[in-house]
Picture 1 (cartoon, rainbow, N blue to C red):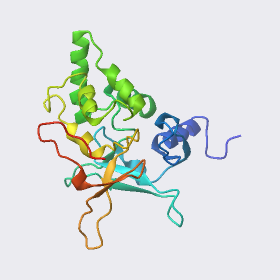
Picture 2: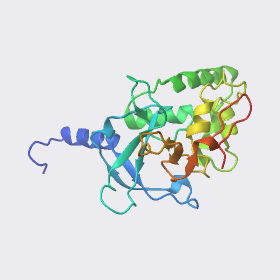
Picture 3: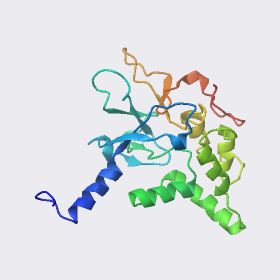
Picture 4: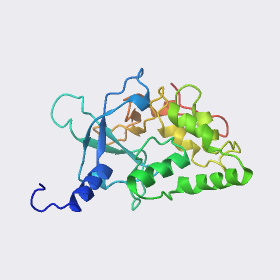
Length: 235
């Protein structure tokens, strides 16, 4: 019997809201464990963080420090990837940022009930139309990359080409290439997001980036900005 105030209609609605607004507390990252085998050990709803919407090119990401000793290790921290213009919405990605267009759309529609029309999806949807018109399927190579999630054969330069459905005509075809070079962790098959550490005690911004999956730290000067040639994160 349901408790007072609950009904057969209300209960599944509440469970659905819990599912779509909860954050996964994942098992600790271990390089020897493939990402697809890494499991969630718990789920949690955070009243403020759960208000964050999705963007396939997020300007923020979240960190959890569950395995750190002491108080406060059950919370999460949301950090901006870069400076955010006043008035612009703070968004995170609900999954690894290197997923291909069709997988992102399927996941968002099936699990969250909406079709994404962010800037990146608008660009990549045109690639899909071009592939359909040519009788090809440029999503197949990115499907393999999503499964590997940055593993063998899926480096940053390959991502730039494969995200574009096989096109390699440069920034006009893939204007968001720099985002992946700068903010996607290339430590094995991690595929986490890199965000600056909190500001220094004197208020100056930190130039050290931390991955929200594997915890890898990288100095900003290790990240090569694109200059018209090949670009990659330094190990």
